[in-house]
Length: 437
Figure 1 (spheres, rainbow, N blue to C red):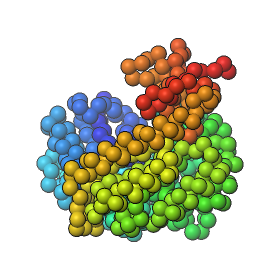
Figure 2 (figure 1 turned 60 degrees about the horizontal axis):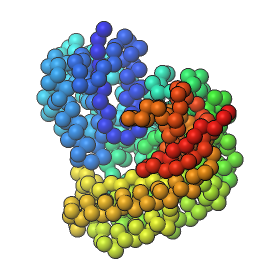
Figure 3 (figure 1 turned 135 degrees about the horizontal axis):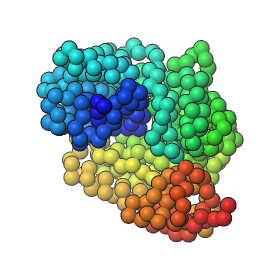
Figure 4 (figure 1 turned 90 degrees about the horizontal axis):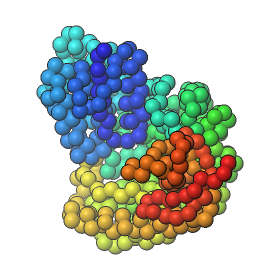
């Protein structure tokens, strides 16, 4: 049996696309093996968010070739899309695919091997209009499944290369999304996470269909077997009273919103070319909590953006305290070649970035603890996923509002949603006792 190994860098969308490509190989009799082992074909699904991502991609390309000098190396994804000329120069690369035509990967790898030639099919995606279907029939986990509903981004934030790597927004058809969710429900999944490059823009390109993200959620809410619908990162401008009025009526829609922030300073937000102010963000959170008081609000924040002063950073700290996030992902700004921000003056010193990052992470932990403490003594529904590392007598999973919870059990309850009485808090998660059911 021929062997193929995959290595994925970057976001959940990349992970989804890797699973889809793995399935293409499996259907043709290939065995999927670990990236560190001998394989006939190595597929590197790249990310290009930072220069570090590019470097990691190059490292894995070279490393894979060292394991098997006769192997076919296929480089796919965002880095390939924005810099195919760099990929071509890396010794050992046989196939180069950008962020389209990934359904052809098996055909191209076999052709490269047969003809002993380098195949570069990266194409200009500026005018791309159609969503490329990469279906997954067999998802490997059995609890949460990611469903890609959208690709591309039209935002052009000043620090971000992704619009150049992914092209303009393209939405998947509602029929195709629902069909995949029905298939997932039939495989035993309880939760789907709707993901994409800019999920909030779903439907804006489907002018004739007049379909919105909310329409998608409402349709999936009718799929038997799916008990939870969760959104990946969305823009705060998506949500208004009408959105939440409809959303809150849906029994399966999770009380969890990952609202992208990036900075709590209006000065910095403007330089970032973000399309909202802190007041608009605050209003969005207020609307969410009006309908779902216990909603978990998670976010991403970049520290050390060019020109960010101590005053700007302190504005972010104050804003974080004001909002009361349940979790914050903190990133130190990294200049990305090809973006406007990489040329901005007043780049922030690395030591300053590090100190700001540490302060914000500490504050994030304090805010998480406050949010978690509200639920001690409560009974919450947990979708159990897996055994805890180093504590195999415990199974862990997540609440509807995205709090990690662990409970002691002798049974394999993975994939089940069970009532748990919350007893105490450990760092970053809660401990509970499974109630009789």
